Length: 271
Image 1: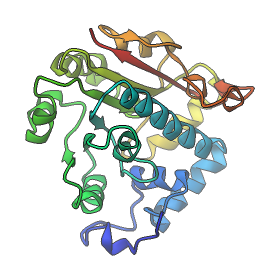
Image 2 (image 1 turned 30 degrees about the horizontal axis):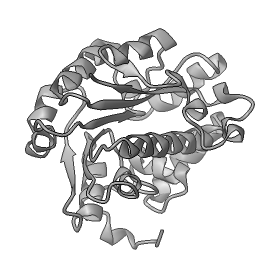
Image 3 (image 1 turned 180 degrees about the horizontal axis):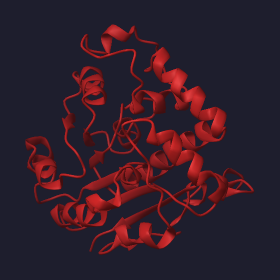
Image 4 (image 1 turned 90 degrees about the vertical axis):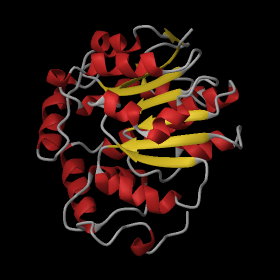
């Protein structure tokens, strides 16, 4: 990807001295849409958890495989909630390899990520960027671009990749996902990736501590709790598994210790 000068994708009001979760994620992926403050926070986190970039890259690789899977099944509408900044293999690019007319609505609660994304996608007539919060599903669903995407007709792929672990239990994430599920047209799908407690229990404390210092504290959940997000959906094979185990490109891609990257992922289909 060409390196842009930051002026072309960062609005003038953005504070470059405050780390931003979406830009930190971009740094872990090896992207160019980040600043020194983001890189500093990323390096500090990596001192405590050296596997972090690998986890983020495995996250993005799962996103790619799941979007490819759904595009191959004929999906052309994607609702990506908690999308961050659509860099390095974003949903619309992956989907359009198989569905050239694929439409994507990117949703993030972070005004910085939204502003970066709007500048980057302003020339793309089939992408929209919306500022809304998964914890306020009624407001999110009322956004005109979201409502238009969800109009009856074609099924929609709801992407909740590495977002629900930023929703604490007291905000009732399962109820919020059920509300989104009920708004989807028949035959729709949900793609989920969530940090889990199993796998690396020794890291749960340190990792939650890192994120507790940011505006996005982390709530890791167990297998059963994560599985409940799929109520009403039918999980496609191989079910709810570790990041690298979901339809890997090759057997070697799984690696000897899939649990070292402690994210559980799955794709569910609605009737």
